[in-house]
Image 1 (cartoon, rainbow, N blue to C red):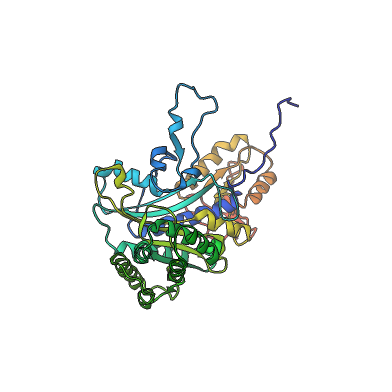
Image 2 (image 1 turned 90 degrees about the horizontal axis):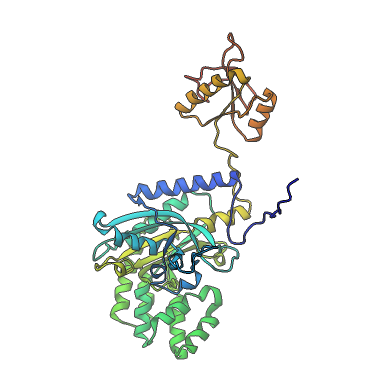
Length: 442
């Protein structure tokens, strides 16, 4: 026995991993989401897992969550890695990507990106340090047509409706409504109020009121902000209810018009699928217009399963061009992990193999390999057994892996091919050049 020290395997908190059966389901979800994005004409891109820290920290207060790169035995004189960090979302890297490849892209540029991201926060239910996001964004030169603000929720509705997940609602708001309302109230720091209101679902009215009054707002101003946050609905009455609060400003009116456009454009979706919720703020600094946030109806405290919004100058900070955009992200890991934990994800196949070819003996291994190649050329995922073990052991292996068909090449010069349906137990003669799973095995 080796004297090598044994390192006991243990899961790392906040870094989920799945068995092959569960991973196969996750891959089907990814394929479904990818197909949904592409059906609306979005093109795939992928950016590096790392970005320069000046890119990652350029916007927002998320810099405290960024994992930086550091080699275990780095050269003190070489600090190149110290300037790199793992991306915490896909929007900031995408903005950098657009600026860098500006002359190679056709605008409006519609892209989707499905990658892992990393955040150095305390792991808890629904929050992970490594997770997969599925983003779609549209960036254009000078202005992004407002209809994209409605198209993105439509895409998400189609994609998520095709997955077996609990009921959910996509809430929509507009940062111009919030900022314009606060400015109309005479608030000197609207961004501070936006950040406080964004915590409403976590700390409640009293907690938000305490932050607002502590930040310089009068009790009347704080109550007005909370009254705005309580406005919620699906119809054309939402703007009128906001106006009924007695606050006005040009920016507020602009935001209400944009919000009305999005709601009207999505009116054909099922009732309640998209709801105007004036408490939705999104804390990231780069959002400037429409904002989205979706949550499970039966567990709203779990956290958002989909979020995003419009930004004006995120890409423009990297290039001397005005490049506004709008995007939305599906939190795949947050959704998937919840359903796995609750036992709602049915186990998929252990392996993707359709057919396993038996090896009759060492002298007939080449024949078995030839059968495997022929079946693969016809589109079947095929593996040839890895040794010349007894046939019973080979069949047992296929059974444990859930392989639906076992192929028996000729065992002698006069023999023929046979295939066994592992589900029914039936076995019959078959031709590898023409066989299909629908053939009767009897």
